[in-house]
Length: 426
Image 1 (spheres, rainbow, N blue to C red):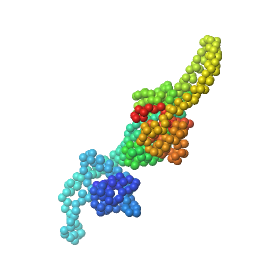
Image 2: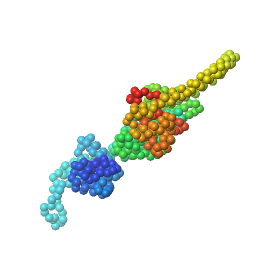
Image 3: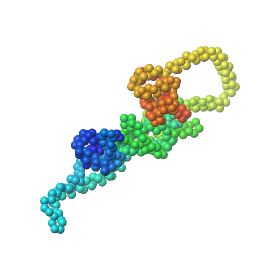
Image 4: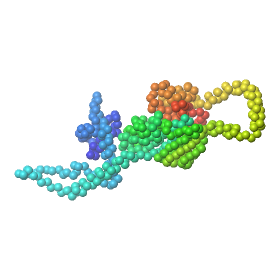
C-alpha cells in the first residue's frame, strides 16, 4: 500500500497535465517495471487514467483516485499521531510451501507460529479504521477565518473580502455567504490561482484544487437597510472583522461596541468582535440640512430675522456681482491644478516598475480616460470576462495604483491622486 500511495502522490502532484512513467519511477524511487505494473493496477481500479500521446504514455490521477489518496493520507497522519503501526493484509498471511501432497480427504494443515501476533494486530487495525471513520467528518469541516473586511458603499451595497484557512485535502469546500444577492464573486487559491465557484442560494461551493488558503471577494446587498434618512447595517459575524463606513457618514446608534476605531481617508473604520452587530448612521449632509429647520421653527424675534436675511441677501448680491469676473479668471488655473493631482504615467511606472504588462495597459487606458473608468468599459475595451477583469482591478488596488468606488451600482475605477513617493514605497 505504501508503494501505491507514493505513486498516487506523484501523479497528484502532476496535476491536470499528468506525468510520464519515467518521472514516476524517479520520484517514487522504484524500478521502471515495478511502477508500470502498479500503474496498470491503479488504472484497473479507476484511480489513475492512462493517456497516450505522440511519444509518451501519460498517467493522470482521477477524481476518484484523488479522493482515495486524501483519505489514505488522513489515515496515515492519524496512525502516526497515535504512535501506532499499521500492516497491510498481506503481512497477516505467511507464505505456504507445500512439501507433501494432500491427504486422501483433501485437507491441508498449515502451521502458523505468529497466530498470537495476528490476533493482537487485527483488533488494533479495526479500531484504527473505526476512529478514522469517526474523525473524517470533523476533519472535512475544518476551516478558520484569517481576515474578514467589509466596506459599505454610499448606495448601501457592501463589499466583503475574507481569507480562510481550509483543509488542503478537501476537493470541495462550502462556505456560507452573508446573503443571497451576490455580485462580482471572485475566489482565489494558493499562488493567486482562480478557483471555480458555484453560488447556491446563500452559500457557495468552491473547488479547492488542494489550496490551503482561499481568498473570497464579493459584493452583497442584504446587509444595509434604509428607513427615511436612517441607514442600518446588520451582521451576525462568526469572527472579528473590520468595517469601513462611507464618507461623510456619522454613527447615531450601535449594538456591539467596537474593539478599535480609526479614521482612514476621512472614513470611519471599526474593528468589531464576533456576534450580532447593528449600526445606525446618517450622512453628514443630511444632518447639516436638518439644522436650519430647527432654527426656522423658533419664533424668537421674527422681525429681526427678516431684517437680517434681507440685509445678507443685499450684501451677497453685491459681492457676487463684483467677484464674478475674478472667479471666471481663476477657473482655468483651478481646473489645471485638479488635473495635476493625478500622477502621470511615467511616475506611476517608475514607482511601480514590477507591474505586469497587461496591468500597465489598463493603467494607460484609465489615464487617457481622464483618470477614471467604469469596470464595464474596461471589459469592453480589453475583451475580458467579468472574473478576469475584476481580478486584475483588485490586483492594481492592492498595489496602490487605483481605488474602487461605487457609482450607480457599478464599479468606478480611479487612479489614486496626490500620493507621495514614500507612500508608494510603503
